[in-house]
Amino acid sequence: MAMYQIHFKANPVLWPRDPKENLAVWENSAEGGRAALESGLVQEIYMVSASEGYCRLESDSKMAALAVAATFFPLFTQEIQELVPWEEAKDVMLEAVRQVAEGA
Image (cartoon, rainbow, N blue to C red):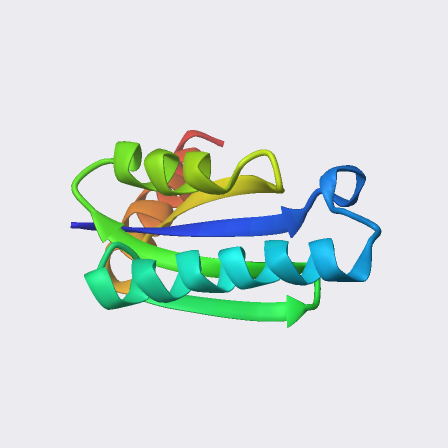
């Protein structure tokens, strides 16, 4: 299974300016995050500021990550990246660099 990381940022244009409406949006977002964690849809959620964070999920395809991202759009914009474990990536990268060096 592949690991995907979703980098999300709040879309400030769409968030309400009224404090009570803003609280309602935050409560909905927090509930969505809780439900995603409890159901196993995502494995981790991290915040780096009040408006930006990351979540990680394991899936056989990027479609699951796209589905998770879609549920929070347009309040959050997202960037999805596949994370390749070091043990798998290093050999592929070293081989590619060796081939280039041999051809030089």
